[in-house]
Image 1 (cartoon, helix red, strand yellow):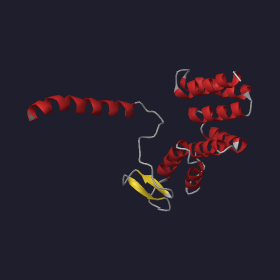
Image 2 (cartoon, one colour):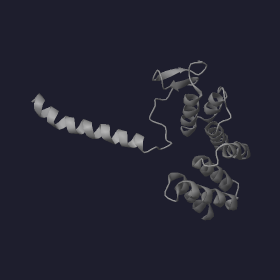
Image 3 (tube, one colour):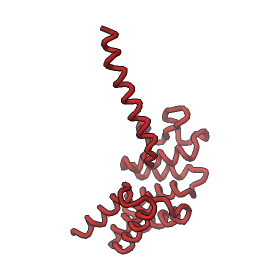
Image 4 (cartoon, helix red, strand yellow):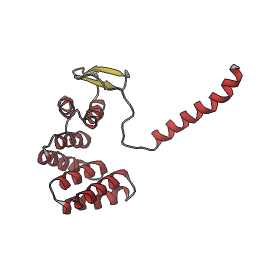
Length: 176
């Protein structure tokens, strides 16, 4: 019976391993699945566990990525507090995620300011252009949102997620 089980499970395990490898090789900017840490803690990729966000051992990259996860989970204030702990808060990613959290809190103009700083640091960063465009949609500036859509198209084409999401936001706003 055990050899029969092995015959069936080995290909399944191989398929799971290959699909995981393909997902990682795809290069998506999506963060890998991580547990939700309690408030005041951050995911440390080195130790593979939640640690106090005051720990000096957690690198800025982990803090930045986890802040984005918090923001995507609707924990905007926690995300901003975590971004406040960065040694170097002036990176394109950190500014983009700060803009995202502030925009989601309803502080759209403040978010736009962070997005524009992020664009200055990395004009080829498609995600920040998507979020900037979405902020412009909120402000009713569809002309500026369209400009960001064209910039995204020049970065990753019209089939990338950033292009599709912003195009949908623009299209959705013109229906109302």
